[in-house]
Image (cartoon, rainbow, N blue to C red; front, side, top):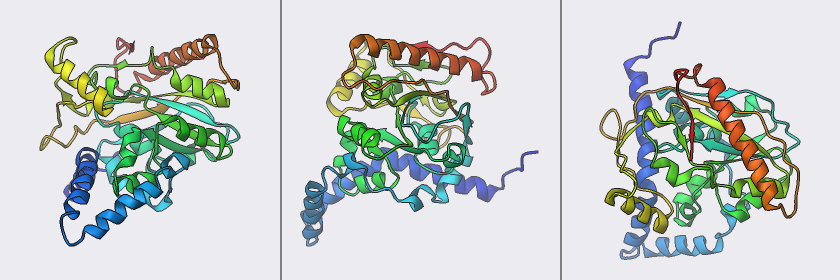
Length: 326
């Protein structure tokens, strides 16, 4: 039987989640405001040094960053995991003598499952896949923000840029698993409870990179990710969606209007099960043709669909739920 949580445990979990949500939404902006503010105070040398360091250290995020194991092992991430809770499910072995590109779906509002499973040690990825080192790749622009970039790199989070992917798949030996949330901002706009929509039909760049370096493709699906927040979903072609698309085009991410279960920001306590599928063997091609990219992209979508349908019932969905790939 599952042990009932105490009020103190629930409170600690809520605080752990709140700090993560606030960090996700505001920490980057707060770092920028702090640096600009300090420029107009007697502490301006701190701000100047910070910007100077940003210039000198500009390429470090794309060269592996500065992973700190203790950050991934912080106790706060265990409470964060238990809030929902989040569980990692292994369906096949990953050979530590190979490299991998993991495509994670859906994005949801904040990708809680991907963060817990691949950017912290709280869900047991290292124990499930010994010898394989996961690295979550996110929006490259976040690594241009002073202080915030240091926090991201300590958790072994990297930019989802071509130089960064090249480094992970060709200059760090074997046993590397780069995790890409393929649908990105477009997929976050489709996030809503009861909806299982992934944006991948026209997303082929990750397949081309996998071919260039002979990295196997692995589909990943986080069941429950879309249930964590209620979102106002604007209709295609409407003014609201046009403004979101414009913002996404300029900034690289989409502003979602969402609300959680409590205090607006706290998500619903809904279980999230992140299922790692079977690897799709990919040959190494220095210059892959469009036909080769299309072929392995098709295999990937078929693997993702199969993963979804094989595990949807055990992860809380009905047999009638379908996966919509756009």
